[in-house]
Length: 484
Image (cartoon, rainbow, N blue to C red; front, side):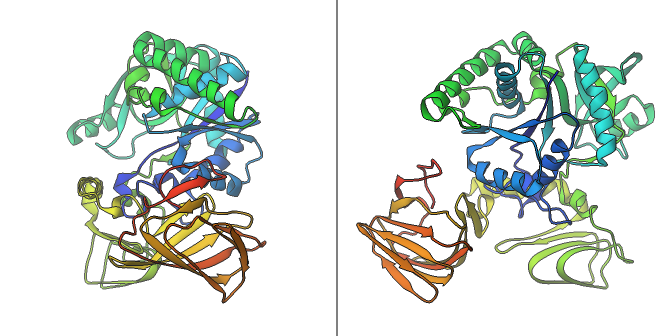
């Protein structure tokens, strides 16, 4: 029986602002060892026994970054991708994974659905628990993993087991309970029958689709239609591709619902394996701070920071020196364009900041100053109402789309590397210290013609400088929306 790890990479991580943004979500958060959570998830899945393939389910906007993280992980198994046009939560995402597995290997394929933004160690304990879950899946169970509560956390869901009904390496479940009040969470620790819900699930593809049909028939029918539409599109566009793009018309119409609400809390075929591994969903800056060892004053520092007469404070400052004097119990997170200062006890309330920024349409909710693209990245160095200065970094062999701007002109200065520039019918080559001018209305493209990163300073001028002032004519990455 094939075991297919399914990496679900879609969590926004709104409590981890200002590092996590709408277009740079939580899975791309870097751990103290320099790896991202997503890279660690790929490594973890790729190291499992007998898994020659793995499946990524993510948003189309994140696909190129996800594939970069997969390459960085060094995982040897083949990666397949299902690309969502819009997030519809975990129940539809796993339904697409189940249809993929059914079509490729059959209904008996065991899916191991893993969140891309959790931290799990050590690998050998995880492997042992996965083996127990796979055995339960063979026996017709949907297996999940329960974490013994370390403290009364009211921000987690809980699993109540039926201790009188042991099955395989675990227990049948009795109830699932979402985010209890603090006093109830404290009682759960004492009774020994409640575990944190890890959000990891293991089941046969066919069983998941059967349970989805039984408990969410409209969603099951819609998922089948969305899969059929995606397969038809793949057959027409690129039959050999390992990526399947879902249609916004069909997939976007599905209910936005988690697998917990849709299936797990309703099914009578759920069992729980008590986890022997250490687990964290890295759900707040307080959780992130615990990944760094404290100094003698209880301070945890990542990056460039000084703490004087300061206690029990977390400081993360990657770009500039941050100093704290005479404070305690704070969370301080500094990025290129935004600074968070919060009391440690209010870590869960950071989400209210992102809600406010979203309501106001603020760019800091969506983007960093450095924005990643399939061809590389750009960093906004300076901007005003009528000018913007960017630093472009283009990967070897990569290029931006053939495009045109209606409202702005651009000056390009090559700092490093070799650039091939298309301007209307003309193509020129530029090297360090050479420049060119792109007037508004001109079709243009920038390509890295060398084997090292191409660094270009771009100066934009015009009456409107928004990223949506773009008309694409050709794009090797299949994008036809706004942005370079």
